[in-house]
Image (cartoon, rainbow, N blue to C red; front, side, top):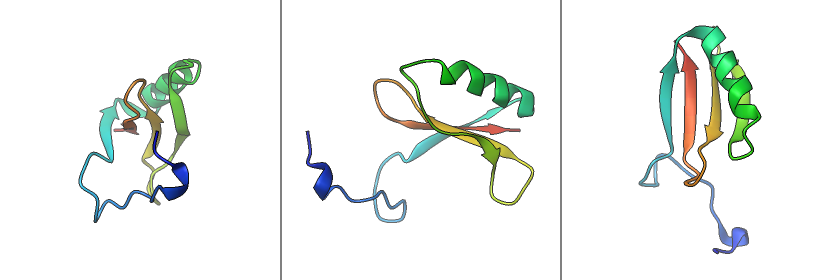
Amino acid sequence: MDDPNSAVPFNRKTVIGLHHLALAVDGDASLDALYERLKVDRNVNIEFSPEPLADGPTRHMICNIPGGGIRIEFVAA
């Protein structure tokens, strides 16, 4: 395991690699239902629950998938 004290924050402008994968879901109700389903799964880490994206009416959430630590963003479309 790498030393967490020497870890550097991710910078999307200077680091090569996958930051996260974004997927659209069918509206706010689907986003809320997905959140309710994922929050009870002990293998899923919710980074943040559904919230507004920037200043617009669109909502999103991010979680980490089991096994790989890849961040998945779900966006209500």
